[in-house]
Length: 66
Image 1 (cartoon, one colour):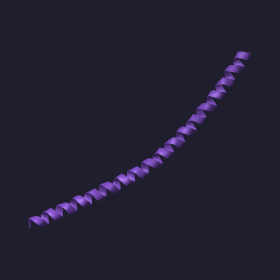
Image 2 (tube, one colour):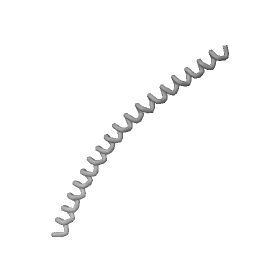
Image 3 (cartoon, one colour):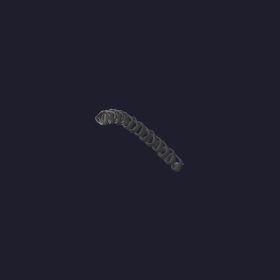
Image 4 (cartoon, one colour):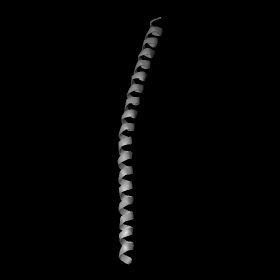
């Protein structure tokens, strides 16, 4: 009877480990895609800031020319 309980416990541990590994794989995959989306949003924001700064430079130059 004691051996059965040990085998049952080992089975539960193995199933729990499989669930943990599966969850870690899913988290890693979603993290990679989230990182890509974040990187893309960052690049877009940098472009918008660069454009805004160029407009500000143009306005400052125009104001100084008066």
